[in-house]
Structure formats: C-alpha cells, structure tokens
Image 1: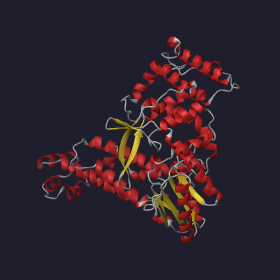
Image 2: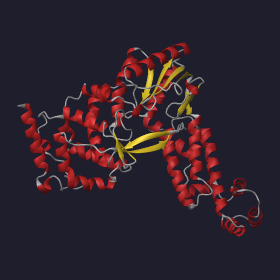
Image 3: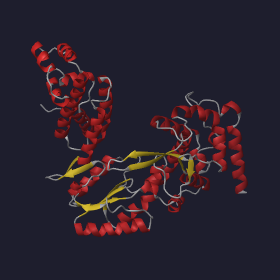
Length: 480
C-alpha cells in the first residue's frame, strides 16, 4: 500500500511538472525566476507529512538554492553550462529533472578535475560539478543542515551557519590563556579524497530515513571524475568543490568530535584542520598516538605524520594565524601568511607585466580589501604599515619602468609639479628601476596613490577592527 501511494505521488508530481507553461516555462511569483512548484508544494498543508526529498524540492527551497548558486558564481562543469545559463535551463528542463529525482533515476554528471596550488606546496584537487548538480546539492544541503548541524560539536567551526574561522582562532587563544600551552596539530592527508563511502553513508542514514535521498547522496559520491575524456569512478572521497561536500565532511568527523569531548580534550576543528590543546608535551605525544589510532582505525582516514606535530602554539599555524605570549595571549599573522601576501603582491606588481596603472591599482586594491577583511583579526599594525610602504615602492618601480625614455621622465616629472632641476637630474639617473623608484617619492606621494584608489592596508585594517569593536560594544564615543 505504501509503495502504491509513493508511486502515485511521484506520478502526480511529475505530471504537474509537465502541465504546460504553468510549471516549467513560467517565472516565479515575483516574476524573477523559474517556478519550482510541484503538487506537493501547492497542495500540502503545514501539518501534512511529506518525504525529505519533497522538502528539498519545495519551491522556496529551490529558489533559495538558485539564488545562492548565482551569487557564488563559479566555473562551469564538464557540460560547459555557466551559472548565467542555469536559470533559463531550469525554466525549460526542470520537469525532466524533478521526475528523474522523484523516480530515483537521476544520474549526476562526473565532476571536472581542477588542481590549485596549496599554500604549503603541492596542489589541491577540486572536483567542479555541473551548475545543475550544484543547484541540487545546494538544495539538498539546505534541508540536511537543520537535521545535522544542531547536534554538531560547538567546537567544530568549519562551514557551519553562524560560525567562522575567527571563532575557532579565538577559542584556541582562550585555551592557551587557560594554560593549555602545547598543541597537538593533526593533519589529515587528502581527507576529502579518502572518505570511506560506506562509513559516511552509515552516519548519514542515522538521521536520514528517506531512501531516495540516501540514494541521491551516494550517487553524488560515486559520480566519478572526468580525466582526459575518460570517466573514472570514485571508490572513495567526497569531491571538494560542491556545496554538499563540507556538510558531508562535518558528518564524517562528528564522531571524532564526540570522542574528543568524551575524553575531555580541549580542541577546535575547522573542516579537516584540528588542534587539540594540552598542558605538557608528554600528554601531547600520548594524545597524538591515541587519536591517530582512532582516525585510522575507526574512520579509515590517514594522518600525515610528517605535517602533524606536538609543539608550542606560537610555533604552529592555524587557519593562517599564530599566537604570541605576554601578559595576555595575542593573535598574530603566521610567517607563511605574510610570505603568501608578499608573493601575491609581487605577482600583481611585476614591472615587466604591461598593464595600465589604473587597472593594476584596481586589481591590487580588490585583493587587499579581501585579505584585510579576514586577517584583521591579528595584531598587525606595524607589519601592515611597513607593507604599505613596500607596496607603494613596488608601484613606483612599475611607473619608472613605464617611463622608459629620458624625455618621457622629464615630461612626467614636470607634469607632477617637480622643480626643473629635479626633473633634469632624476631623469638622467642610471639607477635600476628598484633603486630609481625612490626618486619618485616626492612626486608620487601617498596622497597620489590614495586618489588613484589604492587601498591602504593599515587604514583598512583599523577601519575593520573599529567596525568589529562597534558591533560588540555598540557606538564608540570619544571621551573628552
């Protein structure tokens, strides 16, 4: 009887999806997008019990997912469809897609393999799903998150609503301040590529009873990768690059969090980056051995012992930050973070890269804005002030390189209001671009770069920190 009702429900929903222009080809209630309306979403009352798959396919949930995918943009998958094309594709083809999903015959496309450089060296492999699969994964994530997230550990911070990396770093600082001044820094080797499908699906099935949803999740896990025109089936792993992957990673590691809590450990975890804080090196070595056994034995994951370590927190890096000691434990920029920033600035200010100065400044400022928005958590006033001077020096070097001829330099010096003696003397120097750029300090001043739109790291840093302070303490008033 239940099977008959389920079959009838699928048929009714699929038929409605094909009721001419009403469902497939019309726009939503606002006139801004496709209608994801089905028989379930139109006729069901709030008290009517429907399956999790039907909840996923509800119109509002699908529209929310569509808006999220469009906002995130991203590269196309193996079919070449762009995010801009998705809305029109959904209008024209959603009926076929929803029918396949409800019948359990939907087959996700293989992901497109992309390799990106890792800050620590080597490459990280990403799997880029098609935009349609990203839409379905996002809709699925939105209904699964309220089911799983409330029971996740409060010390798990990665890819969770209302939590961010800064919270994890602050919690780590609190542990150190309490006297837990040895960190067990665990590195999971290629975590996203080595997730055991059976173990993961068993954990998902604890709370998800809709077998169609379980089948869909496994289909995504086993969708495979397109390599050199050949589809390679995925035997393990959850491709890093789709909206569903971070949630599945947290589900996989939730038992690990619970085990650490049961043992009474002080820890913070952000995705596969986990730090445990203890009071002695002896305890740290014991914990490292114990958790390695748990991760490799129970979860079938691999701990990279070369990158993992038991050490002082201020000698390690966590989410791009490190710490320093004093009366209070402070947060600082990790040395590798500073080096990566310099490398990116060097890339954007290559003097041999021909690009208009205004465009160079625009690209550089865009990067610096985003960088400061995250790293303003660290105490870094002096470093960023020095970095500002270095950036201006590099930009002046680019300008000097563009002023190739002596007569061009003379003309430009005059145009910037330099006295005649300076224009003649400086323009005829035989110094190289880096040394000669110092001669431009008096004409291409800090105010010049500010008018050109260059973001000052220190100014933006103080602005962001003041915004955070205002958000916490309310309006900041100057006491006279």
